[in-house]
Amino acid sequence: MTYSVLKCFACGSEYNINRNKYTCDKCGNILDVFHYDMEYTTTKLKGVWKYKNLIHPSISNEKIITKGEGNTNLYNSSRISKYSGINNIYLKHEGENPTGSFKDRGMTVAVSEGMRLNFKKTLCASTGNTSAAAASYSAFAGIESYVMIPGKNISANKLFQAIAYGANIVDIDGDFDTAMADIKKTIEKRNDFYLLNSLNPWRIEGQKTIIYEIMEKLKPDFISFPAGNLGNTSAFGKALMDLKSLGVINEVPRLIAIQAEGAAPFYEYIKEKLENIIPVKAETIATAIKIGNPVNFKKAKRSIEFTNGIVEKVSDDQILEAKREIDRSGIGCEPASAAAVAGVKKLRESGILDRGDTVVSILTGNILKDVSIIPEYKSLKISDIL
Ligand code: F0G
Image 1 (cartoon, rainbow, N blue to C red):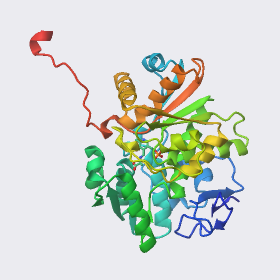
Image 2 (image 1 turned 90 degrees about the vertical axis):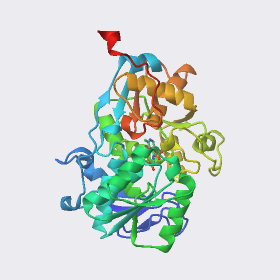
Image 3 (image 1 turned 180 degrees about the vertical axis):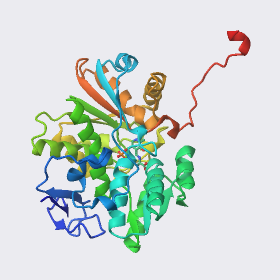
Image 4 (image 1 turned 30 degrees about the vertical axis):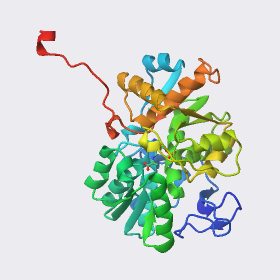
């Protein structure tokens, strides 16, 4: 039988999953969920929970809070192939999840776990999408949510979602990094909030399913995605470690984490082989990834190392150009998501990627998530078409 523990990947300490603290008592690292005797078997459940045996084998099905997340589409488009310079580029659209971003995959697992542990309140800091998902899943489970939001720094559409789903909004005067620091202070003082940031390793378990779905359909050489707080980077490497250790795959695709130029501390950390991340004051139009002090950098480094991965950065202009192409192809995404494709184009141009490589780029959020930058358009008069 598979059984799960919380495990520190730095010092190896193990803890029961019933404890509500996700950092190691001995060395302070963020804990992983670790499944002993894991088997690659799927269930009859849909979407994320199809992979229940690989993400949370011991939770009973009745305890699961789900809105049918996961099972998102993979698109190809001649326009995007031409733009990126990669013939076989596929876009996996995480904006098709119930609240419009990949966050739902982690949220269904974390909120289910919070309910299993009998919490009545949830808490998160967010650049918008986490708070929208946290507010929705908490309300759906019948419990209260508190979201710490740097109101001036997030898209109005995402703020709207959190308010409409009934979250208690804690407006933070500062940026996401200020909000994250406030979260850490809060959970030190209060133990009645269930934490829903990606510090919570159950979020990471849910987000692994993006990779399971891709690897069921394709054998990509590279998988690219936008990187901010580095939850996805951590999750994707862990998922590939699972598949490799279980013998499901032989070849491990290389991960490509893309940061915005003005918010690229992980890029520097990997490139300069630094001991620790050096926080920056983040600045980018892609507010979802406007993060200067990402919490998951150690787990993310493990993912880059395991997959012989690449960390790249792109400018706001490159992000907007890629977004325009993705939108005009009919697929559409929010600005941060477009960084995944902008990065592929940049790496193709610098010769690191080959035209013949198979690449999957993950579009993390829906086109309606952030409409602050409306593209210029020429309006017609009825007389122009009559
Ligand atoms: N793309 C979108 C649309 C996001 O909302 C985020 C993160 C990322 C990419 C980066 O993912 O943090 O796992 O590296 N948004 C968080 C939030 C931080 O609060 O909604 P990551």
